[in-house]
Image (cartoon, rainbow, N blue to C red):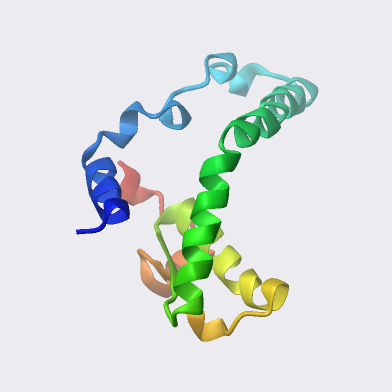
Length: 128
């Protein structure tokens, strides 16, 4: 088993519910009582944290890019797999990579839970 595969297997076994991105944002607990301006300010404040987080992860992002490019050059494929919003974002990204980076559309694909309806209709019942 390759080192990358071992890491992916180990990470898949971890409890994803513990990730910071899966926690309730304390500032948004009363979102339903906020004005539109308060909501967009909250969103903007949270968006402002993204650049710093991405900056901290640049070495890992570059390594992931290098691994994908090496695989594509050897005839491999990049396959996005997701469900719900993540799946729709993966599908969108997979459809944008060929024209943006001049890659063969057959080399970048996606698999999404929920089949065709899930691409356009949010299926939230499965989250309960």
